[in-house]
Image (cartoon, rainbow, N blue to C red; front, side, top):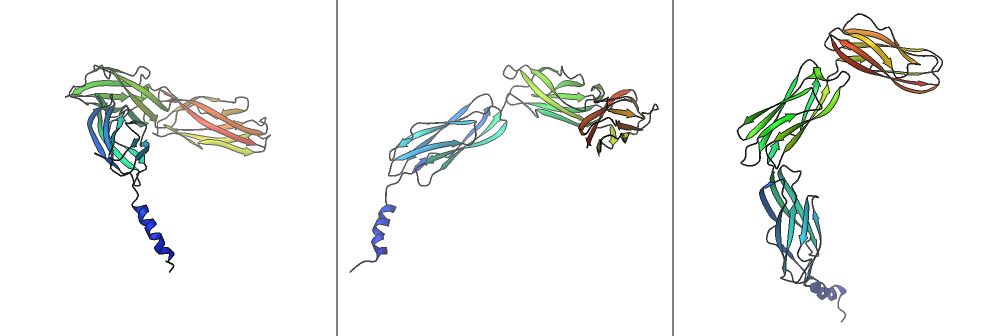
Length: 325
């Protein structure tokens, strides 16, 4: 009698299911380094054992970031054989809690396995921020910000001095608070040169700690516009050969009187400013004129206005564009 094909396959399926297979096991899948210094690498060895019935091949280790490297004792393990996978963590650039992982790929049918570790990265001195931002600055009103320097050890933070040599509009004072210290930064807008609207400066802090001899704080700032032009940009799309004029109104946002003391253009042969008033007022009106001698083509120019804002010198830039056909 001929047996059904299904019944003939049963022994082969059972044999496949019972074939010896490797199995990867670890003494632990997670390690906590606790508090560590940002200046020193740390490592931990995970013990790995082949608890299966066939040879185990570890084929690849995939760290979650470049801060982690690995060393394997043996890549191939016989049944019941053990080795170690060493995980090295470089905490440079980290601060506070860090959690990373390493994926272990092998020929275990259940592969991959993920090993994890965590650490609380502390520095000898930890600033509350590396950057200070001042936005909507007004030249007549100074702004202040404070940076706290926290001790990551039992030693108090001792500061020697603080300087911003390239930024005379920045001043900084030091004060102690227990083991920690503060740097109080003041930006005085009236000392910023006319025409400068944005900037990024460095504050250098010297400490008494030989492991952290200096700390740099970046100060970024942006002035609040004191003047608003309407239109904000002069643009023409016209046939060539005609004189083009556009009226521009410049307003002081605080309502203070000012005067336009000079007007320059990037193309004085073709572009000029007319109608500048001689009396200080909160609102000034003038005309931007493009000569009829301008030939067909695209023009991208600027008008630079020097202003006297109640004794303070300011500069406003007005963009001009023309497409002549």
